[in-house]
Structure formats: structure tokens, C-alpha cells
Image (tube, rainbow, N blue to C red; front, side, top):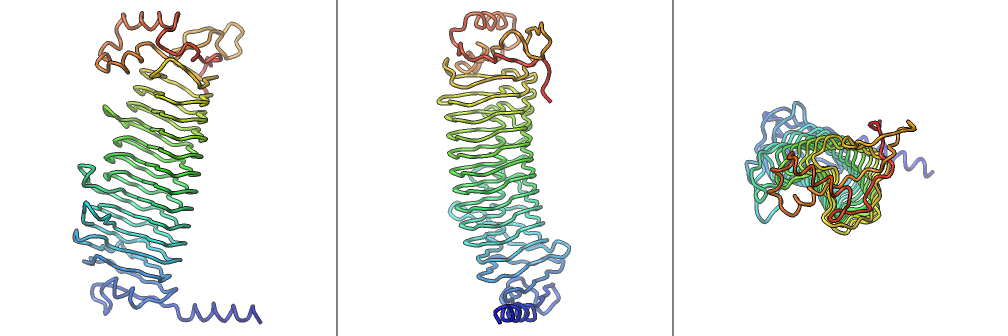
Length: 409
């Protein structure tokens, strides 16, 4: 009897579900009118065209919005285009443009609030303040969206995908260009950020604040103000990402500040001013990463303890490791260093002479940045050699006792 009742309920639900068509010449020619008519389970199909609408409200309705040929919703710089609160809804295949800016309100192309089980897929968002803004929501997927703006200063720009007080979200295969932060998480847990491209953004490609148990993998962070910032967080998995050409006087591929118990594995850092800047980080495993042609590969500031750097490749960086102090509480072991000039008499692939990666000149540049113009001078080479023989300013115990003779695959 109970099974029969369930069948009747679902059958009745499907029989009442309908498709509502929106087009410029149809009887229903606005998205809001279609939403007002829709009931749970309905599909709103928006035909190609331009719809001058803002403030579209979808409240407590489980519906699908599908665009054909990327119909344009033009918010005319008036504010948020679409606001959704509900469960089991999806928005896909639409183009939203011209989101208004504000110093007091977070206007967005799509705002999702207090919602569950949703999908925002395959949309195009252009000239936005915030692109997709998620607050107090869970179990959502944001994928294959292209978000593009032309922000010029941080104070007048928002983030591409902004998540706040949410959990169990997947952000996958999005392209985000020209906003403040490409992807931003604050008080967001148990999320996966994967296969996204974040480039040419003003501040960070990806930004974590107070967000634990998250994973980001196989993303590209290129030519941003800085690649990624992970701050005040723990249990973060960082794997197979590319940090490239995040270059500037105060830029880096990855900023780690006040984080702990995390893994950084199989990432590539190429042509960044500072590949990794670590400040007050503890129990981080750095394994199988490539550092290629950076200004600084690793720059360790204060209060970094019990971190392990193992099986990484350091290739043609100006400085492989830089410290602000002369005490080391971290382990470097079995890394490949392109500057290593030791020998391997027993041919076991491990250098017989330990390698000291911190140069005195890196300490000098930290204290006096203008000294960088002397980088390639003979005097500096002699200075670094003397410090290597008898360390005074750099951590004497910071050595790799098993430097590898060949690049690690």
C-alpha cells in the first residue's frame, strides 16, 4: 500500500509538470512572468533573444531554467539579475550581462541563498560585479561557466564565484577572467575546486578564508595579482595545479598564512615572483612539486614548523629557499636542486655531499630589496660561498642530506 501511494505521488507530480516557453514574441515574454507561473518540477525554456530584466526572484520553487542559444538577460547595471532560494533547481545555458556595482550591496549575476541541491552549469556571465554568489547553501554544483569582466581597481570589483557559510559544493571547469578574486571561499567546508582556469584577475585566482577540509586540484592560476591565498584554514588538499606567471613586486603563486595539516602534491610553479610564501604554517607536506624559473621558489617567514619538503624539483630559480631568520624547524630531504654541484661516487642517485639551499644573498635581499641588482655579480657568489662554508646569518641546520642527482619524475 505504501509503495502504491509513492507511485501515485510521483506519477501525479510528473503529470502536472509542464514546460513554459519564453521568447520575445511569445505570450510569456519575460523570465519573471514564467517563474511566477511555474510550479515544482516545471521547466522554463528561454529562447534566444535579449531580455531586459533585473531582480528576477525564484523563491521556494524546484524548477529548471534552460536557455537555447544563450539568451541574454541584461540587468542594465541596476543590480542583481537572478536571486534564488530553494531546493532542487538548475540554471543552465543563459548569458547574463551588465550587473550594477555598489559599495554597500553585493550585486551578482546569480545569487543563491539558503538553498540545497542545485546546479548552475554552462552559463556565460559578462560585465559583472559578482558573478555567482552562494550564501548559506549546500550540495550544489557550479560547472562549465564562463565569467568575464574588465575590473580595473579592487574597490570597485567583486569576485567571480563567491561562496560564504556554505558546504559540500563542487566548482568545476569554470573559466574566470578579469574580476577581483576568481574563486573566493569564506567559512566554506568540504568543497572541491577542480579543473578551473583563473587568469588576469586583480587580486587572487583562488582565495580561502576560515575554510577547512577543502580540496583544489588540476586548476590553472595564471597572471593574477597573486595565484592562490590559503589563509586561516586547515586540512586543505592542493594537488596537480599550475601556478604560472603570477608576477609583480608583491606577487606570488601561492600564499600560505596560518594554515596547518595540509598537503601540497604534484603542483607546478613556473615563472612566479615568489612561488610559495609561507607564514605561520605547520605540518604541511610538500611533495613531488616542480619549481621552475621563479624568483623565489620557497620563501619562509616566521613561525613555520614541522613542514616536510620531499622529492621536489627546484629548477633554475633565482633563490630556491629564503628564510627571514636563522632557525629551521622544517625538513628538506631527497629533493633535486639544479644548483647542486656535489658528486655521487657510489652512483646510487643521491649526492654524497649535503646541499645547503639558503643563500646569504637571499637574506640580504630580504633585508634590503634594492640589493637585487647585484644578483649575478662575482662578489655575491663569493659571499654565498663563504656563508655556505660557515653559516652565520642563514639556518645552519637547514640542509638536504640526500640531494638527488637527477630530476625527479
